[in-house]
Amino acid sequence: MLGWDDILNIEKLLLEFSKLSKAEIKQFTAGMNHYLIASPSARREMQDMWATISNSSNEVESDYREKVIEHVERIEGS
Image (cartoon, rainbow, N blue to C red; front, side, top):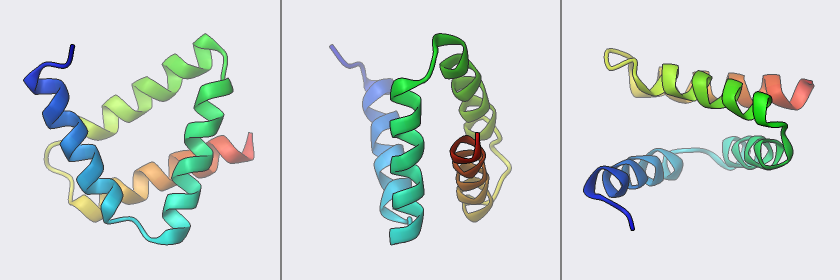
């Protein structure tokens, strides 16, 4: 069962996702597909990267989106 923190995190994710362009959505989806087939250690590395990005409270939203896109592009290139 989802708690309030989970629901708020999902809401934040959906809000950020709604701000993406079509090209960014395509890159994000490709990254998520890569995550689904990744090894457990690769998944942990991705989760650590995403946690680092999301915990940077003083970052501008557009900078956050750019970091996510850069990470997805790095995943696609490997």
